[in-house]
Length: 202
Image (tube, rainbow, N blue to C red; front, top):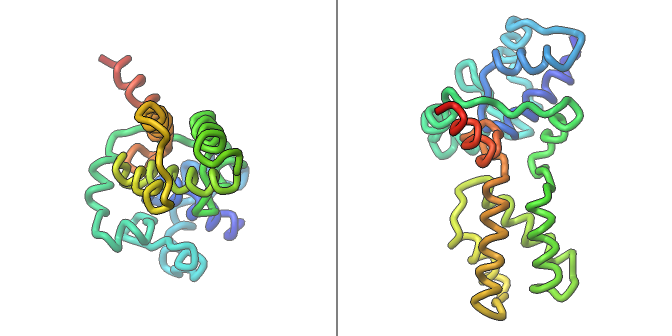
């Protein structure tokens, strides 16, 4: 049993899902690895409460591995209710383990479109500054999204739009990104894909 790999999976899955039951950890691990693990293996980890989990802001709550943030704000039951009966996005092993970095996210075409627009039209070609604000916006899309909070990112940097049309263009690009950002309450499933799947059921 590769204990370090199991810990990497736990941390990655918590960063992707916010909270994850030990059975789901074992299920995904066994899907992607030849050395299968049992629930007893995870129970041993639960008993040990390895320091590495705390170092990566992962807490143990009953049979769940949970982001420290969720417990800190007493949102465990809320997230559990939101996630119930929803499918899970399960990336391949290489992609999944990238989520061990808490700041990792997919730089998809919607993110690239926002970055390209902001670089050209707001920062006069300065991609580094554009990337800084776009990464902050992506974080907002992932947790507690609101357009007002997004525009606060521009305001606190003393950035203004050239016109109302430009503000609308940015708003649309941000909405596209928000609808294509993996969030905890949807188990990582993109909002657009979840609604398409739901619509096809009825």
